[in-house]
Length: 195
Image (cartoon, rainbow, N blue to C red; front, top):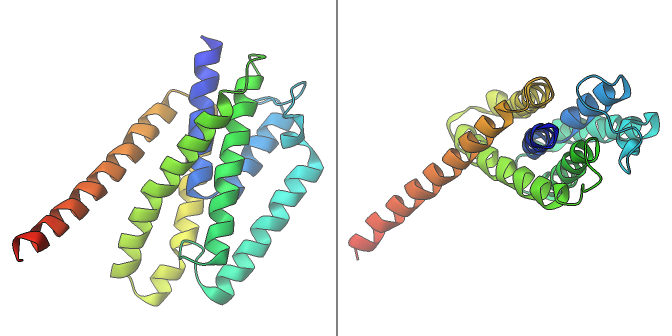
């Protein structure tokens, strides 16, 4: 049962990193260093709770926030958005594998699971944020990264405190993706009829 909970926890942490990567990684590392709900110590992923790694994540967060203030939210397309997306997928894979390594020596399935879950979380939230950005004014649009950070932090905390809730979050993200794809299909189907 421990492995199932570790996989669920890893799924939730990866989803959270897909939404926004830095705060979930900081929370997981801080909790792991205190052995609260997750522990990377004694595994190949012990660096995830080391001070130097957490400092690198803090610096990356500060740089991204500074760039977002100058150029706009990283949820937009561009080099900052691509860097944040890549960091999210990479950190999601590491946290998922690290969560599994805590209870099993077979941690490698956590890498593809984490990659997939981070990508799912990223795609689902990107659609929601893009839809919200179209409807919001400039000041409200600038606050979208704050909401995304809050959602990712809350999901990461829930994933550590109650890992089965991660599966609910995964289902919700998949539902958002399928709903958006269906709407896009309906929109283009209407255009084909007009020909």
